[in-house]
Image (cartoon, rainbow, N blue to C red; front, side, top):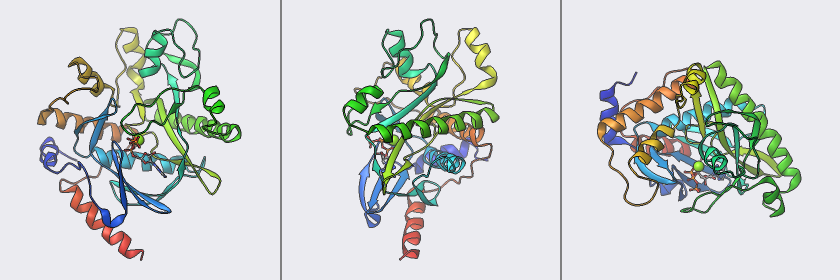
Amino acid sequence: MLSDQDLRDQLAHVLRKTDFQFIGSKYEGKVRDCYDRGSERVLITTDRLSCFDVVVTCVPFKGQVLNELAMYWFKLTSDLVPNHVVDVPDPNVMVVKNCEILPVEVVLRGYLAGSAWRDYQAGKTVSGVRLPDGLKAYDKLPEVIITPSTKAPKGSHDLPISEAELLAAGLVKQSLWQQVREVALALFARGQEQAEQQGLILVDTKYEFGQLDGKLVLADEIHTLDSSRYWVKASYGERLQDGQAPEMLDKEPMRQWLLDRGYKGDGPVLEFSAEHLVGIARHYIDSFERISGRPLEAKVGAVSDRIETKLMAYFDGRK
Ligand SMILES: Nc1ncnc2c1ncn2[C@@H]1O[C@H](COP(=O)(O)OP(=O)(O)OP(=O)(O)O)[C@@H](O)[C@H]1O
Ligand SMILES: [Mg+2]
């Protein structure tokens, strides 16, 4: 098990960015460094933490936690839809099939939280979905809803779009969208069932789908702490009755911490103390362990050097 001292020591080794041109041309997402290799793509999950679409800091072992969570869920859902995974040559790295990503983020919600709550409170629809009156923050929705958003170019925010609008704009063909809907609902149902067995609520999530040889493929990440909200089931009812927010495993407390200090994604980024970063790392590791039901196996050390060595050996071995 990693001690607080281990987490503090790892602060010197966080994976901020990579530069491995030997594996392909690089595209930098907010959290992942992606290397294009033609039919394949190498996704390296860094330790970057993004809030309000801005990278605010780096957290020890966050990249490994995210990549391993994604793998955990890809394996648990592979009977529902083919996914893009080819190999995991390192705990932070996934080699995937390069797909043509659909230009919409497929967001599913079982509860009223985040931007959906803000829109609802303001009397708006949630991506075109009109919810019943009288709901409160964190309430369970009468049924799971799909609230897509556009995939905005780097630097701008994703925008909500209704299903009718996305079809009218021709972003996705009707027949393909029907398939996406069905698969997304099945994935979310599986996620909710499995989370419940771990004493958790899978609140909402975002999927990205791609197409490969005309077939639908689940791409990107699945049910990670960046793409999903998780709450603790045992305390949910009581806390709501007491007017408190649910106990959250995801990064919502982080967003709140920033908001409390007046940070909304613009202007200079706040400083994080070492103790605070150790606390955030602990939160990610604990969340990983609660979701997956197993301890995180991680070692203190230079992540970037380890990945470089593993990737060289991996691609050499495949020549
Ligand atoms: N199998 C795949 N084929 C092609 N692209 C993929 C695949 N899986 C994921 N991607 C893309 O790789 C990128 C992952 O990086 P990351 O999650 O850090 O990006 P992001 O910040 O969410 O999005 P952006 O691309 O807007 O920066 C995303 O652009 C995602 O759409
Ligand atoms: Mg992403």
